[in-house]
Image (cartoon, rainbow, N blue to C red; front, side, top):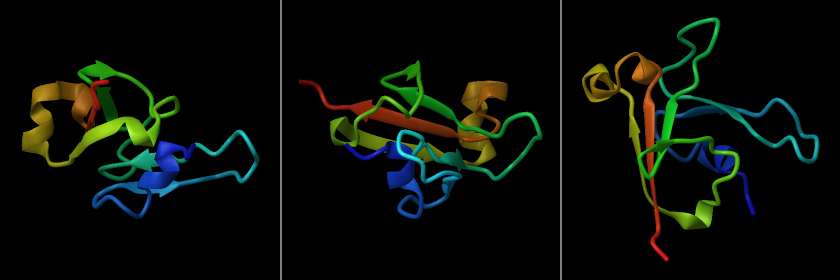
Length: 94
């Protein structure tokens, strides 16, 4: 199974991914949607089926739809939490 953060880098418009380690088991990449906005944290808000969740335990094959909200008008619905962008994932129903 591929890690979703490494799959997204370079394949989705508007997402920047940086993988800082090649060590086995540490293949998570840091992703940014609107660049590095603050020193404390610039990670986007990730919603999987409407629930805030991490990419780390999400199988890429389970994804049905994937949306990246990166402009201010689209992220305004999510308030301060959406300031660094929003990634909305809908998984397949089984």
